[in-house]
Image 1 (spheres, rainbow over the protein chains, first blue to last red):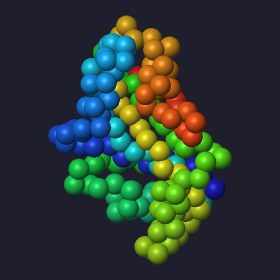
Image 2 (image 1 turned 90 degrees about the vertical axis):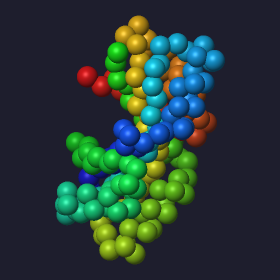
Image 3 (image 1 turned 30 degrees about the vertical axis):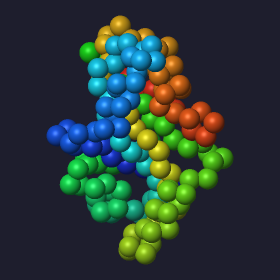
Image 4 (image 1 turned 135 degrees about the vertical axis):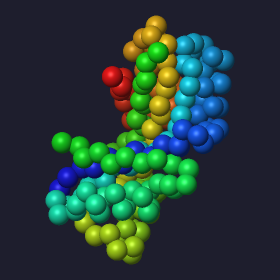
Length: 78
Length: 78
């Protein structure tokens, strides 16, 4: 078994209202110095040793991310 | 300026229906070999150089994670 992390983040050119709301709330709550926040998703997958990087890329691209508005990255955890 | 990533995941003892739905859908969609999926959140923060690790921990704990059901981790990106 192997552990794989898939990171899914909104593309740079896409507005991120959730992240903007957090960035706007921080100074009101007394936290200064944070200039930008982007919110995305993080998936932890337990996969068999026979699952290839190509298969993981297909899973990320077709099921975990909306590639119109999101970028994704697959990271195998050692 | 520094880039900081905050990873927020459901605690191990907490059910994760989103992750379970994904794990259940994968075989139907032709992807075999994935035995478990957990879905969490990932935040990318742009912070000033004077923001301390303690402040980042406070932000993660009080604003980004629900510590009743979620674990969080702050990672400074080099």
